Length: 122
Image (tube, rainbow, N blue to C red; front, side):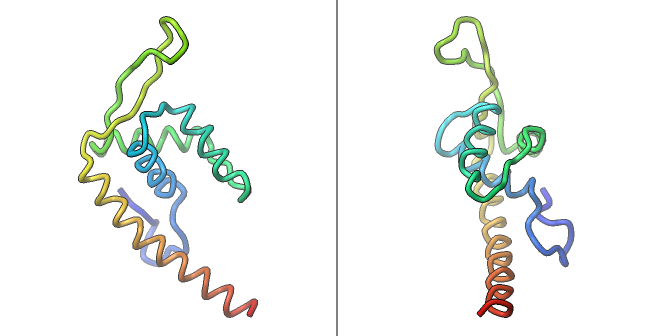
């Protein structure tokens, strides 16, 4: 589960960023892929960031492959015989460890951005 592309990476990789939100959203409620995409799209609209659906699904698949999440089919609310795939934790301890690692990386990125603002705009 690489967070960055190397020690000299400037900022966090998009997929690691998406995985953080996928883990947090899984902690909060059961969601399926399309609903996750809609939620993230709305959350980041004001910042001009629109995650691609393909990146959401690739991130979900990596979390499944890493044994952090598991998926199963459920009937979609308000429909008959229409199923969606929902995601739940398979290993919540691994999810928490990933979030902790990501927090350290996000703190580093925030520091870089704050330094750039201070050095160039203050």
